[in-house]
Figure 1 (cartoon, rainbow, N blue to C red):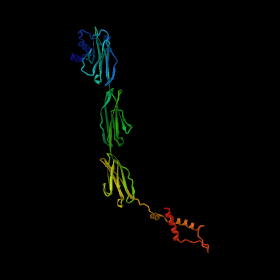
Figure 2 (cartoon, rainbow, N blue to C red):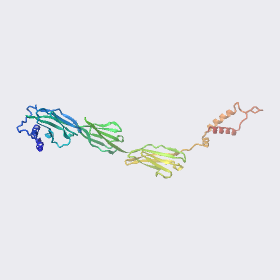
Figure 3 (cartoon, one colour):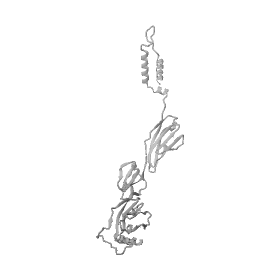
Figure 4 (cartoon, helix red, strand yellow):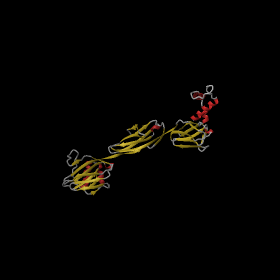
Length: 378
């Protein structure tokens, strides 16, 4: 019997229903099948029901008096005939069957459940049908997304995002991190021509409809050759600790090499240590000698190229009292001597008792006074 019910799909919808009811209710073959132009009084069309995928659908129709048989059908397939379940789908079950109401439910509704459902009631004279169209809405789901990409600077990049859903979802792209509102797209494709290092980051695809929103991200890495910051010359006192530093910006991260003239320097060589940490490299002298002073070159290298900078290690001489005296100019000595001679010839100068003339200090004494004052200053 079920094979016949499924096989009637080639006939018109109304003929399929009547044939199914004849088989189900064992109606006489003379039951009239009205054309579309005849009265529709015994056939009721309910408003469409919209339901979201995964929810539970309840289908109900009224019974009325003098009902002998009743059934729920989907596309001419009988789901329930009275209390008898014809559907093999475990999601379909009977909720209520009495003189007033005939209700079934379909759990975890899917897109395949969309379509026309008919409640057929057999009265003493003819069948009465109530039909309703079920619309299943499906939240968006991104089904095809570009993989994480690693490209070289200057390449042309295309990001693709495809999604399913009902209603059909709207798809868009944006640069998520670092945020850049100027780089976006309202379509499935995001084109980035001649990409620069500043366009590297995380890109987000969004698919949205009236039901929900789905988002996924793509990480875009841009490789570029090293660029090295200008080196800062370093002054160190003989015998002290000295550190030369080098910084490089590169993707992938650069490897560092240090040179003195044309000779490469390695760590743990002649009291030298080289330490690399990400974008930085340090060349450390633990006890600077005369031979260490000079010009050093830092080279940063990755697979796309290299860059270098020069740093000078020079000597700083600590000042002493003797060197300070040597650096004094003759004008400083003359100025100091002039100030002291004024002091000696002033009212406090020593007078000779007989002649009344001032006693004149020898140049040696004057020099000693000047030197004494200079030493007191330091």
